[in-house]
Amino acid sequence: MFKKVLVANRGEIALRVIRACRELGLQTVAVHSTADAESLHVQFADEAVCVGPPPSKESYLNIRALMAAAEVTGCDAVHPGYGFLSENPAFAEIVEKLGLKFIGPRSEMLCLMGNKVQARNFAEKAGLPLLPGARGILASGDEADGIAREIGFPIILKAAAGGGGRGMKIVREGGDVRRTFEQASSEALAAFGDGSMYLERYVEEPRHIELQIVADEHGHVIHLGERECSVQRRHQKIVEEAPSPAVTPELRKEMGEVALQAMRRIRYNNVGTVEFLMDEKGRYYFMEMNTRIQVEHPVTEQVYGLDLVRLQIKLAAGDKLDRTQESVVPRFHAIECRVNAEDPVTFAPSPGNITGLHQPGGYGVRVDTMAFEHYRVQPYYDSLVAKLICWADKREVALQRTRRALNEYVVEGIKTNIPFLRRVIEDPRFQEGRYDTRIVEQILAGRGEAGGSRAATGT
Ligand code: MV4
Image 1 (tube, rainbow, N blue to C red):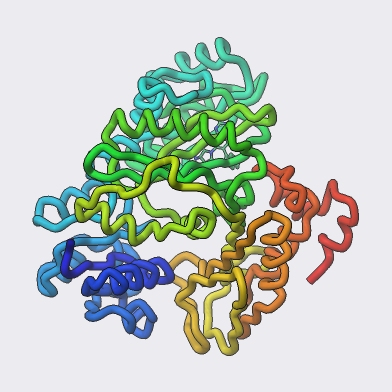
Image 2: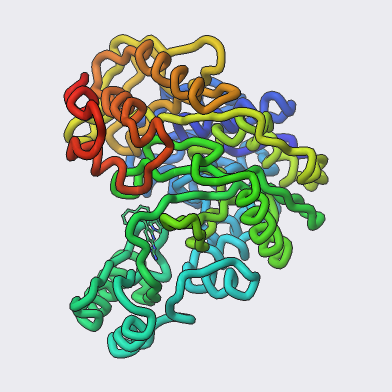
């Protein structure tokens, strides 16, 4: 096992990692920007090193400063959290080369899954279901147009270097595939330094469903079921739940088996997520793979009763997975609400001083947060201030508990999206589990549900 872990992140996930390390008896080193000097992750770690000024590029993304911090404090492992450098193969490689352990998959996994065309090709070979589309990178607008005509409209053009919704363009019947390809490709080149594009059939009303993978370094892999992440706005997830209301035990078993077969084939190690789109008929298609611990990992933890960050660290240290697929059972239903420092109507960021704070608690309630009274939400980073996770033995009770907990929440001094989270939880489509990735738009438009005026105007 490691002795000292560099936590290369900030906010709630840095705290989450530090807590897991503490329970394992590991020393921790926090890194922080000058803006985060008073943060809880700095206070809770055994040591802390300032790695630069507020902008992420100069601090949390500053590989030299991070590695220097690891060196001077004598760390033997690095936990990247999510975001920042967590899926950067160059960072993982440098960590490995300096003889430290990167707590995550091998850098080659980050490389493979970071390129969405390579990931798609791998998925095809490994037997994961794919939407009809291009076999590889599109050589020209002409080629894109030809493939689009073969598979039929609508189609979606995606950047190989994109992911998470970045660098995508939809083309419908009668649209100009050539022109859209040229546009998308030059935008991708500007944004990612790589203009490579691929295309596939576009699914109109998909659900976003992702499967949690846990793998050791000895070839043993299990899955911990799915998370439903369809409640999102502009590719930012807002509410996640597990299990998905759209996944039966039979479907879970099937999706799990195909995903595990693929993970074994590449000898995937550590935790990861296989992302699927599900269409209205319940057919599912591989989209991409995330090679990090995710923001929404707590819903899986509460459903399966496993500490994923603890597992992540132990697996990186070479421990064998001590669970079989048969021994992991979904026992609860969990719902996560992301509490963001933002205007609940315009979604504009709302940084500033939290002058008053009461966080919910009680039976079946967990709050993962870096916030405290008088904490200053910084304008430089993402607006996530807390994750509220509520669970119960039945979905209906988890919903009631989430509603109760949201009503207990008081955050003063900044605006938060809590009023919007209440609207999601009150929405009949959400309550019935009959929703897809359009649900936020539908709620904002105030359409399509009985008693809609209450949900649309409330709070
Ligand atoms: C799609 C899609 C429909 N058809 N691909 C978005 C995140 C990235 N991982 C994949 N994404 C999508 N890929 C095909 N072939 C729909 C999404 C998608 C989405 C697209 C537009 C607006 C919101 C969305 C939310 C989730 C997924």
